[in-house]
Image 1 (cartoon, rainbow, N blue to C red):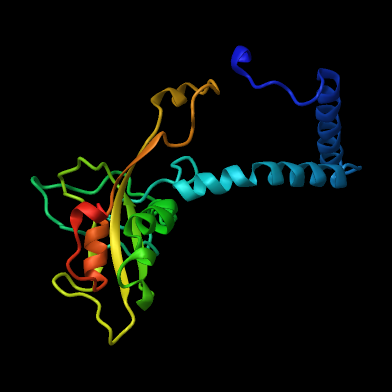
Image 2 (cartoon, one colour; image 1 turned 90 degrees about the horizontal axis):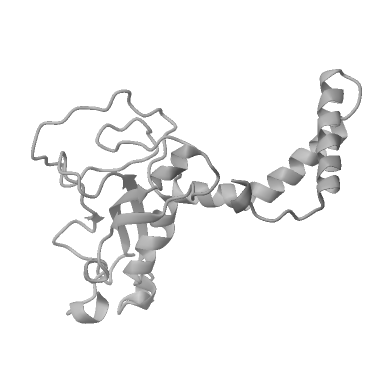
Length: 223
């Protein structure tokens, strides 16, 4: 571990002094004497340092922060993830135990960025109508067949499309399988703790444009 550790930003004596200062402040707080201000300053500095990392992990939907939900057996009422196609090769039952009520619905990055980038509604032939897209994501293995999980556009209703007479609001679902490095369980500090990749089922640009009301979309040009 030491051989792979990043180089220190301060000298060893300076590091020891900084640690001693925080430990002293902590002990002072425990004994009810002094140190509260020093400890609060240290906590604030640490929070500022790790805030971007925590934000990135939450955007990913990292499983170390909250257990991922199972949209087949919903326990978090905020997910609002409709099943599609809601079919299975074999009978299946709920996991034991069920995820908690504060489980992570899916990846915010997929919902807020990935599907929107692929859809490209802002560069579509109907961009002037300012179509909007709301996506719900769920964590599942993309090879799962008990049941199947596929992306879907629920609004406009399949077989219909937006038109000139009303605002265009698309509502879709996606499916994401985060892939983590199994060596991270060794806790050596050598391997990534974020997902190495997202295997995600998204709706194609062609499908998005067609349901947004665009006509005669060339698959070879869009996807």
